[in-house]
Image 1 (spheres, rainbow, N blue to C red):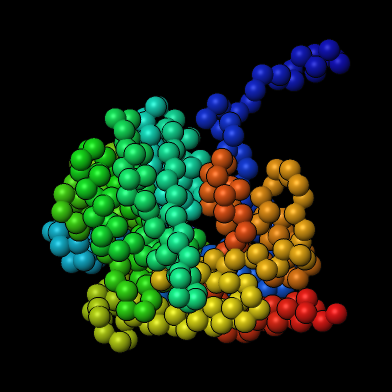
Image 2 (tube, helix red, strand yellow; image 1 turned 30 degrees about the vertical axis):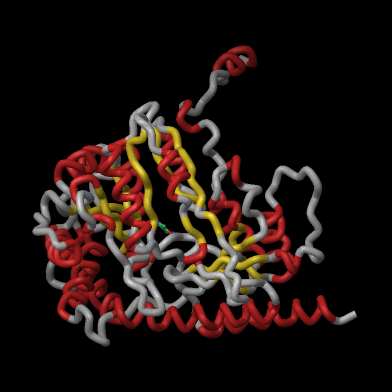
Length: 434
Ligand code: PMP
């Protein structure tokens, strides 16, 4: 019996080759640390305030209304009321006449939209250009599809006039970007407004990327989940609206970010049918279908927003107004204690320089772990404040190039931001008192 059970034990590798090297995930580790130790969690990106009442009411109506079919399957590529309103809404923004059935697809959050894109477009040996720092899942998703990520960094330039650094001071070097395009380049991933920096790419920067895409016949996967979160009167420009780009761009959005309801996991992709037809192939052979009730509620949310578009009552006007104030509070808190903030032009994230706090968390020479990662772990364990190390948003080879920054999320109630401020103030006092 013993020898039989030994024989029965499988000895060959269990996992498929495509999983090699992508098993670690920063969020699993840091979410666990935050749950265990944090008193104030400014780590993972989600609001701790509720979604707007009109959206919650739409969900309740969908759930308990007369139409019990909302509890059943709906159309695989998107609940008809949702794809119809998304086609209308984004058609207007992109200057395109969109067919709801072929130009829009609903996904399980923007995360699954990204997964569909890489699976549908990336072949073995294809290269995909990723701008650093980047939302970390792009890299493993490209690898899982058999492709090779090629990284190009945003390069910071310290402002000379003594003002705080802005996310706009992080820019692509045009020659460096151009040098990354080759015959093997299949796609570039653009994320504007960018997580983690909050950078909102300017028209000039987008034109630079667009020209290279056209010149090298490359696709653009444009992750625009923070499209409404732009501050100081800045404009979010959709790369698909630039000349020559509609045909080669898929634009990704998220109801989680748009309506402050990340748990609903409703996302979408808008683009030409020529591209979307392949996304439908991945979707129908993997997820197939997203939760109907949530799609119905998001459709109603967009119907309201279409009516109020550009008006002061619009959530897409009110949310950024509130978040800009929260950004300013956090900027002030951090600046006051010497944790230098990089003022974000968009998103609900803010990256801060921890150099002045290095004496509290000494570096370990030759440690494999980037300094900012050790710092963020120390901070949550010792100060109860959770944040995410910036190195998590760089590829393995570049993790140590930008390892003295941490990212905070400021989509939080006033009380949460105040509690963070109290922790920082106390910490600063302990540092300065003998
Ligand atoms: N893209 C970016 C840049 C993000 O920050 C996130 C969420 N943190 C996503 C995509 C995923 O969005 P969702 O929650 O809709 O899946």
